[in-house]
Length: 115
Image 1 (tube, rainbow, N blue to C red):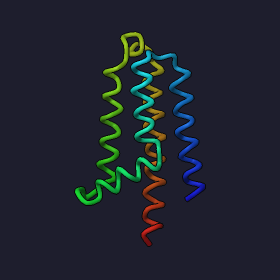
Image 2 (cartoon, rainbow, N blue to C red):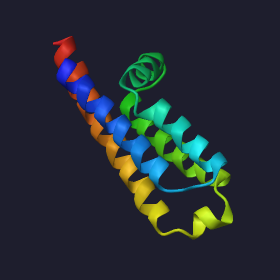
Image 3 (tube, rainbow, N blue to C red):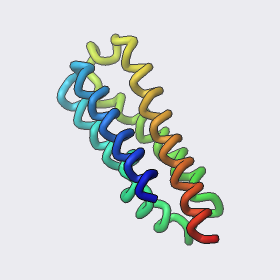
Image 4 (tube, rainbow, N blue to C red):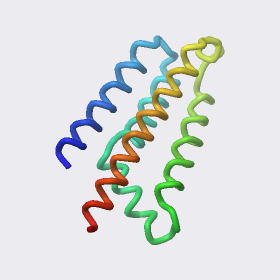
């Protein structure tokens, strides 16, 4: 799991670099960083999954849906200037890709761990 955890830290670090290089408004940057903390931190994802396991038939799918919705809500904090940047679409796509990679790896490790 240490190799996987290192990859997740790299994904999170990469997301921070992308967000900080964009020159976005302060509120939008904070919202994206908050999303990154919640959905690209492996330990936080594990806590969320363990909390959802009892109440959900497919906690991984539910987590994925919630991450996508929460990322869509971050746009509410974007200024008009932020929304006019075409790079924002690519940024959000990259963040979702990093999340999906992290979630897939977590799912594989959890299955391997339970076996």
